Image (cartoon, rainbow, N blue to C red):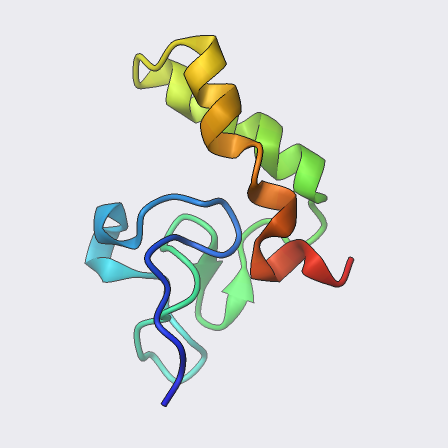
Length: 88
């Protein structure tokens, strides 16, 4: 059985906030690792991004949602440790 994560292992967003409960794998099943904003049909939507680029993007999204800058920074600081970025 595949490991189920509470947060997307690409951007760190809580999986329960992802449309459809997660991204989609190549076979159409729901991904238990990546959210719908990062992963679709078995591929990353931003395949060439670095962890730093994802951090900046996620920080911007959090600020758009009304989070203060320091909280956005706190929530995104762990992105480089997520599964997607570990071996990069």
